[in-house]
Length: 323
Image (cartoon, rainbow, N blue to C red; front, side):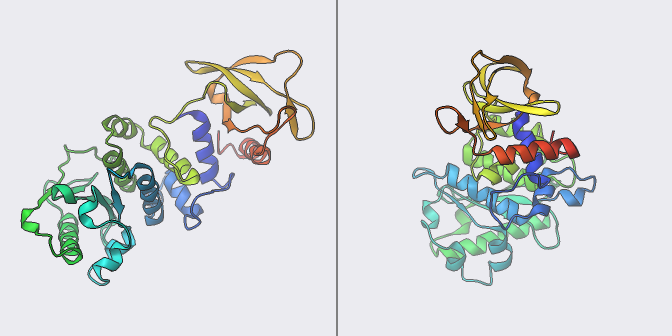
């Protein structure tokens, strides 16, 4: 993940920058998602983070010819078997019109997340577990039975004897190396199913800490980043750190771990313009700490995010928590 996106994720999780995602996701949820605590339990993902991340992915990948349905953790764990199935299903197309129905599962006693994917058109039900056992775990078995009962109640034409049920083994899907990444893998497995990108899951599993930071940015923007995330873009504007100060400039060229920047000069208290002579410098990408940035006007330019960038830079230098 590009440095400037990592810095922003750190700033959001540490409360330096305001979080613009769903208000139900709080500071504790974001710190847990960052995953920086030495106490593994503090790095577990909440159902609010997982449910909203899955919804953002559904909005991104669900199309007319590839329909995705999400059943949230609370509706599946707390409502199935108590609330009528049609109420839980809510609005939208019927079961048989869906390509994937995805549920994040975590029974009340297990303290472990795994994914459950239903493919109605193929009559298949699959669980994806990043800490698989050598046998079908009771929590997996119970989730499959629960989903089966739900589908039969939802649609009387469902005949489970015609369906295939699958629970992965350790060698089938990537496995977590600690006790706190199960929620991340549950989201990652969903993203693989929704995007159909094998390269994405391979790259993400190679750096779960960076995938966590990417999730923070995506929840903040309420949009899915490209995979891999876009690096510094030619002709876009960025903020570049120089020890005790920072400057705004346009990326003229990007080569390896360096970027050539054409810098703006300050024209007023809150305005910037091009100097009479070009001010060019080549810097390491890690010095680019914010962007891309929008400029308003035709010169001198206004930067709408100036106050946020000032706050970000000052707090980062005082606390060394962002970059």
